[in-house]
Image (cartoon, rainbow, N blue to C red; front, side, top):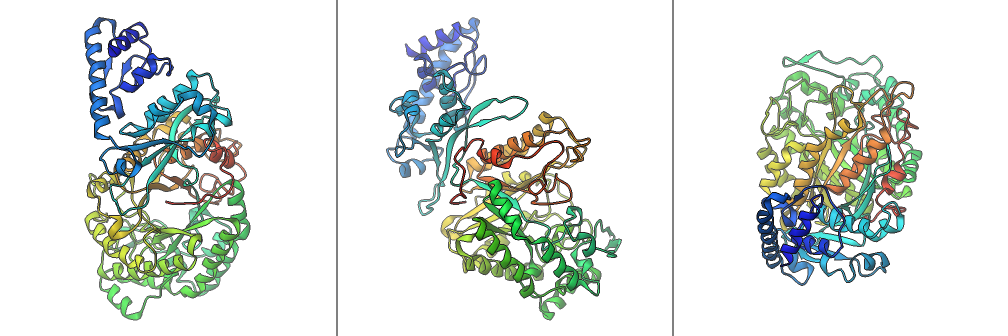
Length: 598
């Protein structure tokens, strides 16, 4: 009878959309306002057929409503549990709760005793926060722009498990309200990572692995007169790198002056003032280990002589103990500012991809990481990075493995030089135990992967907490191509990758975050001719990455171009990127640096 009354009401109000059988009941009782027009999605996250609301299909609608109640009853039985731990061991079930330690008059106004919106359920988290919570706020006449309402909404929490009893970590999200900033303020309810766990990160790149395009202060002197080979093994070399600087007779002085210029305490003060809480520090293997003559002899047998000679020149610029001086400075500056440091293994022996950010562009397709000598040296380097992280304790956020391994197009579009993921997985199984000799299981080890490969990793589920400790994944999102100045188009090009992130986040035991994104590809950055709304775009992008994972890290802190260095830049185009407001958009109490649990 209840379903029939709901169906009759829907026929009388065809603009109303119902998101689950429980919403049918609450909507009929006046608890929900109208949603997008004309359809009743299947309950509990969209499983099953969708039912159109049309006057000519009354009986089909009645059957659909009745079927929805049956499906919900089945789901409630499958997720029947009285406590969070029992709930999270059930496949597909999540624990929905209200923070009982905080007084919340708004919550009582919206839902009374909360029984309809809490407990062990298999609800879709976007529907939960966006419609069950968000639409109720509107129906009760409250203003989503009001900071008091934003804070009240965050009392509704979602806990997702890992299906591992021995794993103490849980994915914790809160409902939140995010507001668009341009062209007009519009707000919506949504899930996002809890503010105490959110990564608001920035890359401190281009220091230990200089990249000419960033054009940091001192770059011109560092690369003055430097040229590289045109080709190696028949492949074109696109750009000079640090390995070419190594051929200069004064390479040590150049690199010393460059690091003295680019590593500054004031940078970390600015990061903290703007609301960042994690600094990602890209390092190369030569920054932490010395390569022995015997290892060099073995390496020469596995690559062209010219390629090996360039690596040796790079390794000889400065010893690891000298690089350690600036690394220690960075930790000191970060601690003073209340920031944590993520140590990123940005450049592996032999190069994990053909790019100058590995220290040496050896030509397209010339990737030598998969040789036994390269992978063995990489294990030594990661052990050294782990000891560095352990020495700094809680100031170290964790270690990220193997930045951007070759194969950005995924498993369906293989190219010469792409790393084989099954071989890579085997190497990770060796590398992580090496790191765990220095770091506890609770410290995060992060595997970097391109979005197109994430479905493959979902199928593997390879790295359990019991055997490997806390393992997370990261990815990078970029736009390369012609300038896109239209805001909607600029956002739309990322939707596929965001979907990959969300699917991975919801369907694996692993956390996921984006450790590189940038504001490039939309204009010159000059206020004279660039009208792209960078602040609006960044506000949207950062929000998406906290909806579909635990946060993000912008590339880079600084650059001669604001698109690649929007943190230090005073403006980008005609916009000032308002980082404090962006970080506080859905988290009005973000304030002090977070207690981070990746």
